[in-house]
Image (cartoon, rainbow, N blue to C red; front, side, top):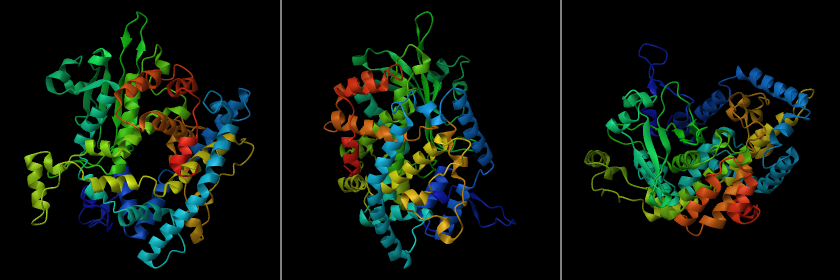
Length: 521
């Protein structure tokens, strides 16, 4: 695990003395363990072992996945559809599988040349490190992608993370939402939490002591009304969902007597836990993830629909990501990056003392907000190796469409990762193509994104168009923010999403901004 940050390795369970695991660390498949290992571990053999184990961690699900695909196909045919994809896409923005396949195919053609160029640059970096770069493997990519950011773009992830303590980052994000959408967030603690619990005990309204609860209100300009409740569950623990997501706990709707039932929403993440000497710190990509998921939470909170069925994020799948994807742009805007930042040594006298104890003699305390040179290094890396990232997303989308467009009488021929992204897998070592079962943990295809994963890409068309057209000039324009709240977010899925977009943009959505942002216009 040489190279893996100490704040990760220090949190790993140690092998018991007197057993075969003495002196070893237990590395789990949870994101806070897995991703830093893939990004920073210098030992290629370790990275390969971790990658392969992760690709085969739930192989008992392979038969269940196949059974689900077969049953979906049979059910679609009973209903008169040629396949499951046609059934699922009929009421989405794309309307037909052909529209989806054409979009994915066109994007693949546009991205492929850039992907090859990116691999060649990464191979050169690998060669400078190892002396050999005939192959560039899947388990190489996160490591050399991270190394390229550090060496060629001076992106010091650990130094940047010092400016994004989790709690102050959350406060900064909520402040942005307050200014943009006319909201007020009030954290409920102690007696305030007791007061809203039916039992009078505040601990009864959370599922774990670490969970934070906020009451959310309209500000004065929006009428001072109550909006709903926001729950934040931020750190990993045994038995908890292992990724980052937003979950609706209670939808909003109008009851039979005309009163409003207010929504409650939960942000569930797995950021590293604080230690006695240092708070939980976020890498910039984690800042983006947090803002994205909070964006779903805001969508959930400010939606106002008559029926719970159409509340909040209950939109069609190829639109639901667009609002949160649009908000990610704030995390790449210099003024907003600075507003979110605060060096952890400025949080408390105790943290300042801990920083001084760990700093080299003569080092001055860092500035309270992130320096401009670090902001520039962040912004300059936004689209580094972007073609490869999007080709990987394309692989997931094409796999999804292939298995759901193929008759159960046929064996679907799904494209390999190498075929689309040109990254080498174990097949390049002579191990064939049956080396892993990623579908066994492809939760999206069992959790509602079946024949819909393409939406992560197609919704970027809408999110980029909205940002470029309305917010790029001034991301903190409160007038436009409130118009966005009432025109887009408030509607939920209660009207055709294309009509919502046209109403907000004043025209049909365009792919121009999306392709321009990707550099493939």
